[in-house]
Length: 244
Ligand code: ZN
Image (cartoon, rainbow, N blue to C red; front, side, top):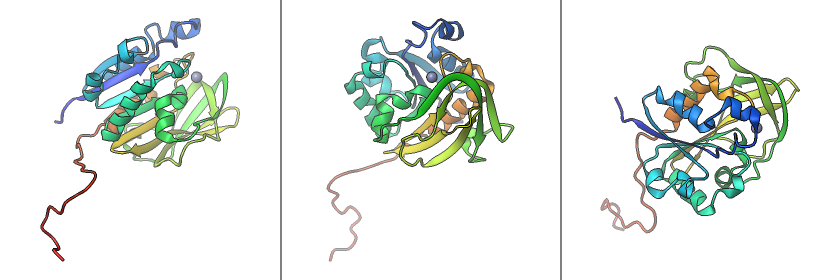
């Protein structure tokens, strides 16, 4: 039942260019690993990256995309403003957007949030425990415990300069003592947005089955199966109501 979800997985592909550790873990880039585990679901999955024409995000491609997944880190500034505007408009029209890890500083996320999206970080690999604080939320469907753990991750800590989320689904605790709102949702226009914190390029986080489950769930959650009908601007009375 239901149409296939068209998912586009974008990463810079700079993540493995100058970093031997990252290259070993993600030889074909982070977007390839994410695309691979999504392909097992009922989804039509394609990939795009920074150095393609229009970053692989042409008008036609985005119009065919139900959910866009975005991972970026070192090259946020190289993403062209006109492409960011194009993604932004698509989100307002109802395209889902999943923003991963260091994409908190991507142009598209900052534009959608309207704040600096700054946070504190420490690259030492340490234990991260992500507590589910919205039990029963579709994004944490089929997780077996109250939390998931990632053995080695980069730390992100509060304060995270974001507008108040619509929902907080996960809160992380780190070995160093910090906490972080690590799974949060927003709606902008008709588009559903999920920011998900884990995924440092030097850790094998996207091979973690529970992390994969959350991303799969998030794609399904962000997909708009019912495209809303909207009319803006001057609205003549169509219903023949009050004629006073
Ligand atoms: Zn990182």
